[in-house]
Amino acid sequence: MAQANTSQMLKGVLQGCLLMLLADEPSYGYAITQRLNEFGFDTVPKGTIYPLLMTMEKKGLLASTMRASPDGPERKYYHPTPAGLAAKQDFLLDWQILSTNVARIVQLEANHHE
Amino acid sequence: MNEVTLQREMETRSRLLTKTNAEFFGQIQVYLNLRTPFKDKLQLAQNLLALMNDLIDAQQDGVTAADYFGTDPKAVAREMAQALPWNFKAMRYAATVGLVGYLILMLLPGLMVPDEPVDLGQILIGLAMLGGFMVAFSWGLSSLSFKRRPWVRMVLVMLLCGGLCYGVVTAYLWVHTPLKVTLTGPLSIALIVLFGLIAVLQFNHDRKKFRFLPIALTFLFVELSVCVLALAMRVPAAAAWLKQGDRIAWFLVACLVPLYIIPFGWMFVMMVRGFRANHRRPD
Image 1 (tube, each protein chain N blue to C red):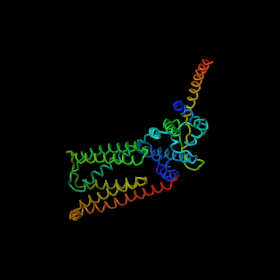
Image 2: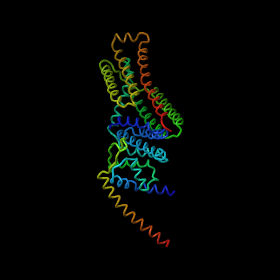
Image 3: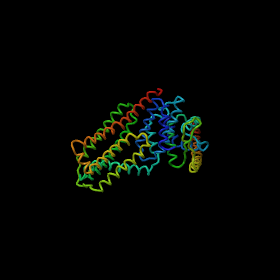
Image 4: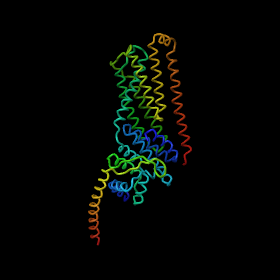
């Protein structure tokens, strides 16, 4: 149940996270999933990343190029477009407001328990 | 890289997948190909190749395709299909090729016999039925692509195809309309030559898509054989010779033999290669 709740919450923020990761460094599917793992997103089914990347590309937030990876085979490297970078800024702003509001409510809950 | 190069790359790289992972990837591939006939095929090929290369990497790290994709691969494939952009050019091309190809296949046999009226209404009703059949077939087959037991999938596909085919053919044979035209003289000859030319041009285009080569070859044989016969029937001396005994039937048999041997032999060789490649895969 806890995992289901987490994945529901993640769905909303994954797009913002991907925009930030890809703004930091253009990357491809598997490498992105590994970077997500490094940040503790190891419970996210990696398959869900692909439709999300494709949808973001369709919306014009990401652009892609096929090029050889350091390991050899052709990879689809994604990078944010100017619209994607703007969406990243919007996400950061929204996240700050959301996290501040949630932190205040969590603090209220903590105060009740004291 | 174009679509064909990407598909060839995928064929080569797929040998690195284990049996289980190859089957898993195959299900996604079948689903996406059947559900996205009018979507951007280049993007589809790029995404499938990218996905396959990622699965190979995951496999090397000890992660199976099932672990990588989660418990609901069909949902992932469905979302991927929705995320692919439409390709209106491909849509127009497929509609034109489908319509012209169908008209050639349906009109040519009628043109074999000079002065024989052609039922245009029957042809149009048949077109609507065939369109319905193809949509039902694609949706049915793609829905079955994630069935766990391959034999269940095979039986269901055969039942679906057989039932739909039987329904379409029976309904088509029973339908007759008054919308009949008789194509005679120079117009019929011009049409036969035009149909033959279109058949050759279409084959020249399709032969680049190596997977469809046997099917393209089959259509070319049918269309050219009937074109030659239809033209011969309009030359008095040739028509008189052909009408003796069972010569028309023998001519058609002579055309049908390579029609079956070459394309189906080709498909058989490709199938055997596929089985062998699958057999050599690591577990």
